[in-house]
Amino acid sequence: QVQLVESGGGSVEAGGSLRLSCAASKRTFGYYTLGWFRQAPGSQAPGKDREIIARITPSGDGATYADSVKGRFTISRDNDKNIGYLQMNTLKPEDTAVYYCAVGSYTDRPETYKFWGQGTRVTVSS
Image 1 (cartoon, helix red, strand yellow):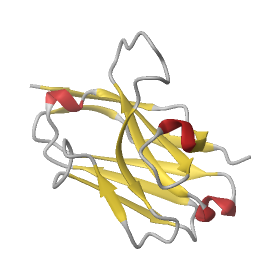
Image 2 (cartoon, rainbow, N blue to C red; image 1 turned 90 degrees about the vertical axis):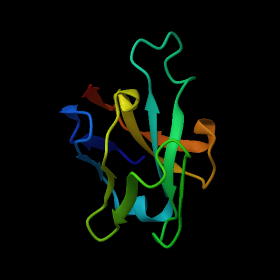
Image 3 (spheres, rainbow, N blue to C red; image 1 turned 180 degrees about the horizontal axis):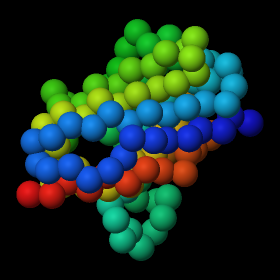
């Protein structure tokens, strides 16, 4: 079991930046792909409408981004510290969501991610 805790969410104006962190409880964090997902506020199907926005290989040598965040967001990880990051720049109101980190397989499907954090809310005002 790997416990994940996100932090760094908050409210920001459009064009601003935030850095999310994902702290893991075990060194086995480094064995898994790290993914960042988001879910729009008020979703009627918690867990089922999560959009993957970025993922990074266990070693950190490869990453994939959703088109909606490409060029604005950067995923990274520090396996020595059991922590992952999502740097979010040039934020837009449509980035408003609850952001989740998860670890699992290198896919874009939420069901392949084994452990999840509780989420951190990001609100971007225009």
